[in-house]
Structure formats: structure tokens, C-alpha cells
Figure 1: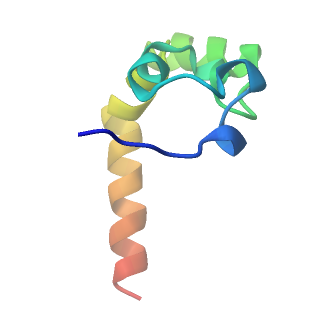
Figure 2: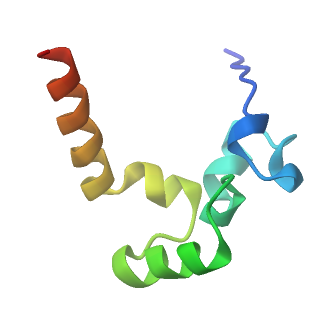
Figure 3: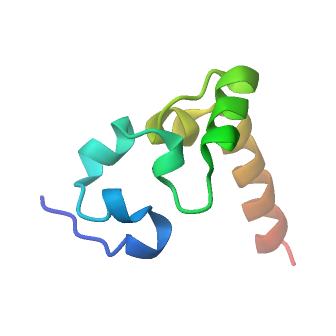
Length: 74
């Protein structure tokens, strides 16, 4: 199954044409608004080096679940 998504607003220009599989291996600094310094801080604090690492991180997933549940219970 092919999945297409317009992600240009979420990514730095260099990564706008990347496919989803490549993006999971891209550095977190490929995300628009995430600086190299931010990426270094994420690597130091959580061992996060790629977008895939960020998306699979248990702390970020827990925070996302808590926010989603809180919003759903309004």
C-alpha cells in the first residue's frame, strides 16, 4: 500500500522530497524548528538521534497518549 502525505511544512527544505522510510532514519534536525543544538540535547538526554527514535521514544509516546486522553475527556 502506498501512503502519500504532504509534509513540507514539517520538514527542513532538504528533506521535503524524502520518502517516509528515509525520514525515519533522518536526523531530528530534519524537522522544521529543531536546531542542531536541540538535536544534540535530545541525543544527550534521551539517546534520540533520528526522527524514528523520537517517534518511538517511550517518554514522548506517553506524553502524547496523556494529552490525547485529556483532550478526549473534555
